[in-house]
Structure formats: C-alpha cells, structure tokens
Image 1 (cartoon, rainbow, N blue to C red):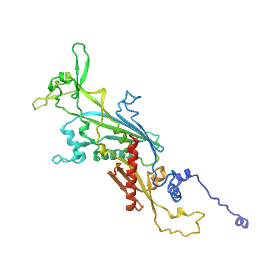
Image 2 (image 1 turned 180 degrees about the vertical axis):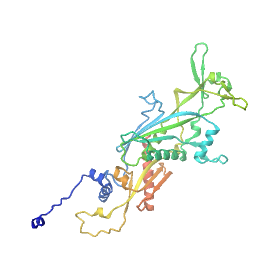
Image 3 (image 1 turned 135 degrees about the horizontal axis):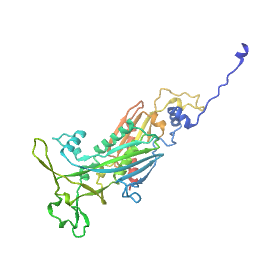
Image 4 (image 1 turned 60 degrees about the vertical axis):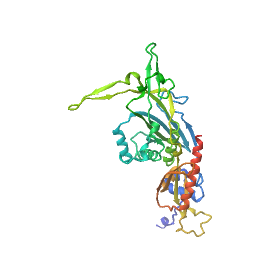
Length: 382
C-alpha cells in the first residue's frame, strides 16, 4: 500500500501548432494573436487584403472564348479566395402583368410611382464551393437575395438601359443575301417609315452566376465587388426580327368571346454587333466588412508579466478590417458591412451587434477606411 502512495505522476504540458490550435479553439487562438498586436493571418488590425482581377476573360467578346453565351465576367482573387462571376442574358416581352408583378415585389404603388420603379436588378445565384455536391444552403440563398436587393436599391441598373431596340433583317430577292438594319443605322432610309413601329416591346434580363472557391472568411463583400466589376464589362448583343415576321399576326379564338388578333415575332440576337451596358456610374459602390471584438484580459498574461496586476473587468475593444480566416469569422460576433463609393457616399450599412462595444469613434474610423478601400477598388478597374 505504501509503495502505491510513493508513486508520482508526471504531467507534461501539451503544445499545439498555430494551425491545430485554431481548429481546436479558434477563439483562444484569435485572442492570443490579438494580444500580441496582430491577427492570425499576420495582418494588422486595419489592414485589407490585396486583390487581383482578370476582367472579361470568360466573355464571348474576349479573345479566347467565342462560342459561349457569357456577356460579362470577372475573376477576383482576394488573399486565398477566388470569386468567379459570369453574366448571361435573356430577352422578355414587356407586358402590363409583368410590370405589376415587379412593382409588387419592390413595393411600388401602381398609383403613386417612385424613382425606384425606373430601375431594375440582376438575378444572381451564389455558390460557395465545398468540394461536394448538394442543394444550395441557406447562406447561399441569403447572399443571392441580398445582392439582388442591394443592386436594386442602389439604383445602378436603369430599366431604360435594358430596352431592346430591334432591327429588321431584310433579304435581297435578287441574290438571296440577308442583312440587318437597325433604327440608328445610316442605311435605314430605304425602308418604309412604319417598318420599325412594332407595337410589342422587349427588355433584356441579366443573370449572374457567382462561384466562390477556397473560402477563408465572409464572402458577401467579395461577391458584391466581383459583381460590380462584371456588370461594368457587360456587352449587350443587338437584337432583330425578320422582315417577313413584321406583319405576321395570329388569330386567337376563345369560347364565348370575340376573336382577338395578336402580333407574334421571333426575336433573335445578333452575334456580330453589341454595345456596352449603360450603368449609372455615380451609383457604383464597393463593399468592405469589419468586425469588433473584446480583448480577453487573460490572453495578455505571459511568463514575463505573470506577476503584474491585470484588471480582469476592463473591457477593451478593437476594430478588425476585412475579416479573414475561420477563427475571425467564427469568433467575431459584432460585424459591420459597408457599401461606399470613392467619394464617401454610402449605399448601404448593416450592423450586426454582438457582445462587443461599438463606439462612435470606431464608426467614424471604419467609414473613412471604407472610402479609402473604395478608391483602391475603383482604381483597379481603370
């Protein structure tokens, strides 16, 4: 019995590499780094990642890809994260029913119209690649909806810019050669005056597919910035109808009602002619994100200052710009997203409060940082 009591147990401290510690306890890893004055990514508290752009590389109007249906694209690299945005389009017929449905979606009264009714948005689909197939997640659907709403309420895309001005394809009866004449063409004087007076109206619809690879943090600001770059590269193809279809009408009979005559057209896209999408450039803005976190007093205790008195009740908050790494995304509960232009004009600000103390000085500082970041992002495309 005495021999058992004389046995001793040796306890050795267990140490982990920074990568393993970030997985086991991301909050502890983050606090240890912040107490030393830098972040897990070795950036400063208010330091942003640099970006690299590859503009319009995937578009059919680029040098290498001529056979796809992409009319605008952007590849954005920020740190280790890649965002690939491709924009495609379609043509729809304008109708009273469609306009009423759109007004209901954006909350515009039919009687009292607002400026918002003169703008439209793009229809985005966000996919965060995780190496496995499956249905879209709640986060992806929320990101897509946010992008749609923010483009609409930022008044970037006017409806007038998406109106289709169709041309007429005429065929020479002598040699059978066909050519397309548009309303603004110089050789349209040979056609009758009423040939371009088509009662139906059409508009372009824009769709964006945004894929995120190697995600390391929040992705909304990256998706928004990539979408802004892609929109500025969009080339809309011109559209036309055949001259033989300009006077084509279809009789529709319904039981118990008089026969109605409806015009019908087949509208086609011109693969050889296109023009740049006209955006309200003064409303284009770029996104940045921030986080505010309270420093843990215990994380400041080291072997050198273990004998010093540290106030455990003192709360000190720090502002982190451009959240990165899994530790920051999971541990920072107070986040702020800002969409601003290079002149300091704000398009959107969202604040998600957590346990950190947000002071007016922090808000002023992050607004100035957002303006500088917008200047940097705007210069990248020039």
